[in-house]
Image (cartoon, rainbow, N blue to C red):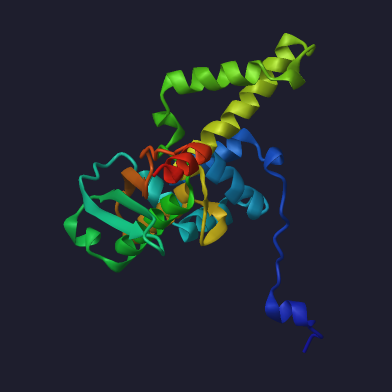
Amino acid sequence: MPNLSRHHFLNLNPITLIPMAAISAKLVKDLRDQTGAGMMDCKKALADTGGDLTKAVEWLRQKGIASAEKKSGRVAAEGAIGSYIHTGSRVGVLLELNCETDFVARGELFQGLLRDIAMQVAACPNVEYVTTNEIPTEIVDKEKVIEMGREDLEGKPEQMKAKIVEGRIGKRLKELALMEQPFIRDSSISVEELVKQISGQIGEKVQVRRFTRYTLGEGIEVAKADFATEVASMSVS
């Protein structure tokens, strides 16, 4: 009997991680054609599996991304409206989460996702939109004006200035979008990735449609009397 090492019995084939920049466009296209997943998801899958196409397909399926992307063209008209009230009852959220069937909407996975995303909105006071695509043009233009006028850009070439401003605006817009936020229960994934994963597990298209965040007392103007005037009025008999 040949003298086999422990590695022969375990058949260990460690995966060598490679940078996303080293992944060829053709390999990404092949993976997208097979799975329907997004470009960045495909790049990450290939990077994490050493550029192995077969393993990358498995990676995407395990994450629930491949099947979720294929469902992206379907209509999600069912779902539920959920709420979250933070401890102390000072912050509350109403959120509409859609799916394809009422049966799925009543399920534990869907309801759990609804609660988690409503809680996410409560935890992110800067978030105002579901995606960056919903942000009005006038807000984007306003941010450009603000960034272009910053002192640290004075004296820089226009091309460099434009590139810096573009990067800053992109970052700012992501801060306003719910789907771009790191998930509060697992910061290694975004809210968008979480929705894709649950969509893949459920077997239906799932999407966040809209939300409203309430903060106690927001918008109420409270009159503040001048302290000296208040004391003087108290001394009048």
